[in-house]
Every structure is written in structure tokens, then in C-alpha cells.
Length: 531
Ligand code: SF4
Ligand code: SF4
Image 1: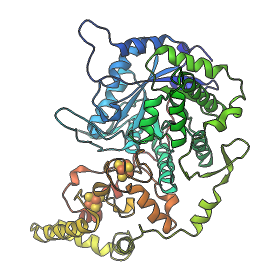
Image 2: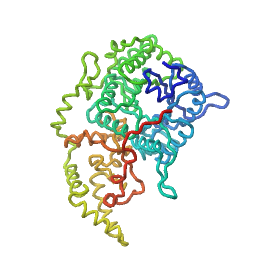
Image 3: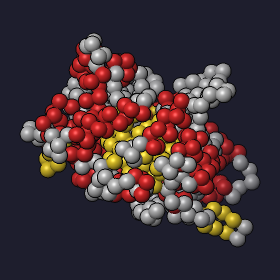
């Protein structure tokens, strides 16, 4: 490994060497007067450690208000350490996110992990509202546009602002039990890369076959983007929390939880087992072609070092002898690729034959309702450009737009909203995504209003927040039935325009005011400039 002082984070991911990163979580509140922050001490110790390539700083993890990541990043940057700052959509509107991105660019923080984020869990005098004006795909697209020189309206027309040079990361949550949960995750991953993600970090997990499958999927989809392996060091309590689905998207199977509880009962409270588990995961990531490894859930600098030393002590092929011990799936978990019996991992040359067969003869599903079939017909008849009633309706809405008397337009809007409220739980956003979401309203049926695919939080097909199926699992079932599932998240990111709130989405659609007519900001995946 080259000396870390001379290597930027983006070079670490391009380099043949395997680098290690460390995650730090900021605190709610400041250090007591006269005392140094323990977190700063830990960060400085890691920054000085030649084994730690970069430090990643989280943004209000778990949905709790904390010191912002650039506070700690500024301190660490002065120590000549490579830093990744997280940026999440839960607490900031798109303007807040853009403002934060300008601040990061001005401060020299170019490595950004762009994620949707956990729903707020707490707040002053009650739980905070989740913002979710953007989701991760939209945020990545915006950062990518900033890298190309953001176009804004100036006095003399469109102006291009100076380009940023963000190195944009995205997450994927592959530890899903069901096909209808997992496949939308993979399709959203592809959408994020098309939107401009330069590197990927899967959610923490303990099934190396799934981690490997993410790599196989990227190879199969011809999306050559570097991957960072995520290792969260377990202990008895954390294993129990993950097993009980207390932290959205973090999965520990019953089998692994039992093992953790048993090991925790040993004289060293499982310390050796948990460190070895983490070190072996890192060794497997290196063996299967991940670009780097990432350690989280650790409070002491020396623990990071011990795990890295142990991981580095394994021989080049030792991982093959223990990878099968590190596969802890959920019951009947779905995999896109067949298992290679020799390694226990996926076989990139063989897609799951049951999946392929089911694409040819999609199973019946309760999610293909009469209402869904009707919506498809109506859309095809009236809302598809060049077809059926589309031109007539466009003419009609243009005619209404030109009239001073708005009575008919208002009456039609009332009728539209009433019918969509009954049929789809419509919230009258005015920029309708029903066609993007298999005729399920993202405002009414998704707790984060996500229009670009699922967040990472579903468990067993259910929404992380409410007692309901995840919107995107239902959408997948519907689209698969019609042979459209593999294209469900094709295309650019969807952005909703809040200027259209409480206006007629039909009128906005026919008059070309909604997102269906907006030219997407980024069609190609732009490559960041070398630093
Ligand atoms: S996406 Fe907007 S307009 Fe469409 S049904 Fe939902 S709230 Fe109504
Ligand atoms: S419905 Fe799905 S995408 Fe929406 S918040 Fe729930 S789990 Fe996330």
C-alpha cells in the first residue's frame, strides 16, 4: 500500500491496493466546557494512523440531530486526512442540500456519500418532520449537474456556474429476503450510477454471498463502478438490535444472532470472535474484488488497527477457506445469481433459473388489481402522447388555460382530485408520478415519498415506517406481471416541482409543465476530473 499522504480517496478506489476507511458518528451536543471532544481525539488518532486511508463522517444517523459532518471533517482535513462526508435528504430540502453541497465544495470536501437517510426518529419537543424533497437518486443527479457547471437562470438567460468536482458515492441495500424487494434495489442502484454515482457502498450486512452478488450485478449490467465493503463490528447488543429489525435495513439473521449471543457468553465476551468476523469480512472483500473496506461501529482507534492488522495477516487466498462461514442469509432469501457450490458465492455466469422462468410466465399477484388494469387502460387512452385522446385533451386544456373564467378549470381540478384521492390516496401534488410508480401514489403510499425507487429500509417486504407493504414491492409485482419489471427504473431521476402543488396534474401534464416533460439534467454518467 502506498503512503496514504500521497493518495486521494478517488485514487484509493482506482488503485490496485486495498485501502481501509473508518466511519465516525458525530455527537448530539458539544464537549463539556474545558474538555476536548472524545470524538475529535478519536478522529485525530485515526487520521494519524497510516493504516486508515480515509475517514467517513455520518449525517444525522438513525434520524437524530447531531453536529453536522463538515464540523468534524474540517478538523480532520487540517490533519491531511482524506475525508468522506455523508449528505442525506431527510432534514434538508433541495435548496438546503444544494446549499450544503456548495459549502462542502467551498470547504474542499469533494467526496460525498449521497443517501436518502433514515426517517427522523427524534427532535426538540417532538419528532421532526422528514423532508425528503429529494431522494438519493435525485440528490446524486443534482451533484452531478453541479459537476458539469449548474445551469441557473441569470439576468441574461441561462448561466453556467463554476463546476464542482464532487466524487459522488451511493449506497445499495441488498440484504432483502424477497425478489420483489431485492430487484428494485438493484434497478435503483443502476439508476443512481446513471445519475452520476462514481462509487458504491452496500449497506452493512453479514452475507458475503450477497455482497459478492452486488459486484456480479454491476459486472452483468456493465456498470464498472468501484465498490467499498461495509463492515459493522458486531457485539451482543448490536446483533440483537439488528436481528430485531430495530435499525432499518440492518439485518442479522437468527442463525448469526444465536452465534453472537453464544460467543458473547464466553469469558472474553466474544471479543475475539467479533474482531475475527470483521477481519475475515475485510479479507473476503479484498478477495472478491472490492476496491476498499470500511469499518464502522468501533469506539477505539486501537480496535480499528487490530482488525486491519488481522485482515492484512491473511494470505492472498485464505479468504476462500473461510468465506462459507460468513454467509448468513435470511430464510429462503432470494439471490439473482446461482450459487457456486465450490465457493458458496454467486456464479456470475448463471442467473437464477427460477427468476428467469418467472419473467416468462409471471405469477398472479394480488397487487394486479382491477383498479391497476383500469389505470393502465386510461393512461394508454388519454395520457400517452400521440395516442387516443391525448391531442384532444391537450387542445382542451390549452383552451381552458387561455380563459379568464377559471370556473370550469377549477371544477375539473376538484373532480380530478376527488377521483384520485379515492383511487390512489392522492395528495394533490400537481406533478403526478402515478405512471412512474405502477399507479401507486408516492405521496400517499410511500412514507418518504420516493419517486426514484425504494429506500433501503424495507424488511420482509414491509415499509420501514408503517405497517404496510413497501410501495416498490407492490410496484414490482404489478410491472412484472406485464413483463415490465426489468425496465421499472430505466431513465433519469424524477424530480417533483413543488410550484405545481395543489394544481391540476392533468392540466400540468397536457400543458407540458410537469416532470414528464422536463429535459433530464444528466444523460451520461460523467467522469469526475482527476484531483
Ligand atoms: S403523485 Fe401527486 S398528483 Fe399523482 S396521485 Fe400522488 S399526490 Fe396525486
Ligand atoms: S414504502 Fe418502501 S421506499 Fe417508501 S419509505 Fe417505506 S420502505 Fe422506504
